[in-house]
Image 1 (cartoon, helix red, strand yellow):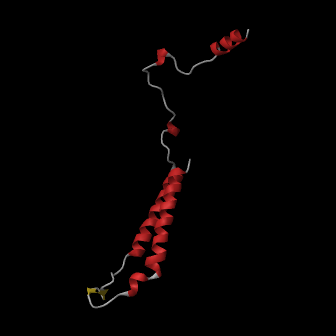
Image 2 (cartoon, one colour; image 1 turned 30 degrees about the vertical axis):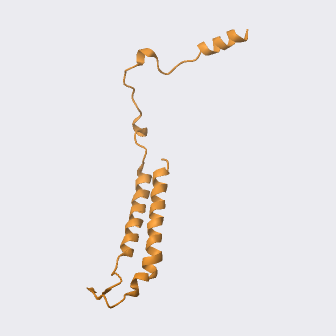
Image 3 (cartoon, helix red, strand yellow; image 1 turned 60 degrees about the vertical axis):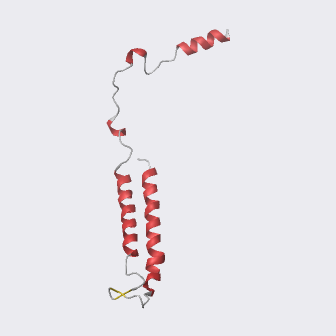
Length: 107
């Protein structure tokens, strides 16, 4: 009795595809063809802008450059400024975190 019930239930299942449909093209919905939406791209551009700002803040003269000229006998303490050591890398890390958020965010 139980086996006939199980066979009856299994025979009532309808499959979405059959062997006759093999090789035929199926239409995908137009709205779900691309994963990223406008919101994702907006966040990606914000993250990219943060990364670019961070790298621009890191720019400056090197340790032996004074007034735009290389001088091996002088030392420029500006390479250890708060802007170049703390703020700029923080912008870059925040930018990469925003990029990860933009990629993982669903529509």
